[in-house]
Image (cartoon, rainbow, N blue to C red; front, side, top):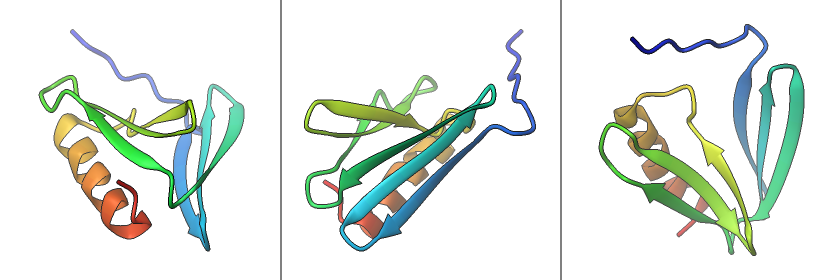
Length: 88
């Protein structure tokens, strides 16, 4: 059996402001903020099956998104982010 143990304060937020793509996360009470220039940001999908993973990466840095979503939701997130952010 697989269990998804999320704490009530865990979150992922994607903010588009001007030329910046900002990803704010909090997991296990540890907040983090990652900023990318929209022009250089790439949305990368690793495997499109049940183990799909979505990343935003640029200049040697990457952040995983959608850790609390199923594979279908992750792929939809990647597509929407590509469209809205103009990310490649």
